[in-house]
Amino acid sequence: MDINKKIIEFRKELHKIPEIGLKEIKTSEYIINKLKNFGYNYETVVGTGVIAYKKSESSKKAIAFRADMDALQIEEKTNIDFKSQHEGMMHACGHDVHMANLLGLAYYLKDKKVTRDVVFLFQPAEESPGGAKIIVEKGILEKYNIGSIYGFHIWPYIDEGKIGVKSGPVMARTGEVELTIIGKGGHGATPNETIDPIYISSQFISSIQSVISRNIEPLEGGIVTIGYIKSGTLHNIIPDKLELGGTIRAFTDEVFNLIKNRISEICKGYEIAFNVKMNLKITDFYPAVKNDEKLTSEFLELLPDEEIMNIKPFMTGEDFSFYQKQIPGVFFFIGSKSREYTAPLHNAKFNLADEVIPKAFGIYKKLLQRKKILENQ
Image (cartoon, rainbow, N blue to C red; front, side, top):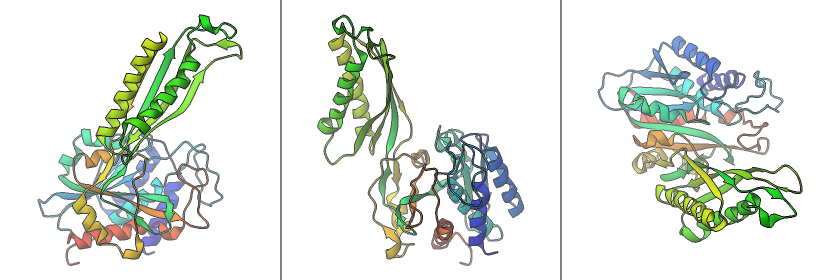
């Protein structure tokens, strides 16, 4: 069996055993067994994460390749013969493909000599709570002397086989907003005797949208989205409190922090204006994914012009950014959209053509050859 077919088979086997973040037990066991069969030593990290490396005789900085491991709590609705065997869980974000390519790279390098260490980083909990952050905090980058890192994502929003990559920001910094508005409930017929949190929330939602339209330069990217509102019991009762939550997205720390500060200031103003209590909590999640200019330029030289997709930054988030806060890295996208495969990520019918699956391995192989990390290549 050639290596591309092996990678496709790895993906199918991993697709059957999806597990959520920090509980990727069977997934971890599968990866460990493969690495052991290939002849690698390994280390477990963050419970279910797995790290192995191809040792060289050099003291130069290592190059790392990362694959995320976790799946989503989605009931699969495909008709494929390697469908998820775990009820209510599915690899609907392509992480099975990511792991399969990294296993393929490890298999390819097992009998090769390298001019510097190559690290295979299988990372848990990308979706939540962010396994990359934990790995960085545990000093793994320093332990393995990692100087640069590469990762990718299957991307059903660009055409099959195209490679989306650019230097600078490619994915957004993300955060979550949680707000509890504590007012004074009462009868719907006497609103003057209440402090209505539903009315106040409608004004608040309108006000925070003005942060984007009136506080941020038009060419800068920023989003505030409210995703849920919880309040009330009956038609004619004004409730005591309301809970709402949403997300903040931006490509720069300056814009992200401006949005946070303005939301906080608006809440303080509403407390005075409406004699209400606004209990606000804003949680920072992932930094922006920012590709290193030099590494991206080198990366682009690996690709035929017809394969390169000129992309704009995406407002989605990725914890690969925690690595890039410490060392230079490149995160790229492999298109999987075709007439047959149109379902987006995080969808119960997500799938892709077999021909696309080994694409990242081919790019990684070219990268190692270009950097002369493979001896006699």
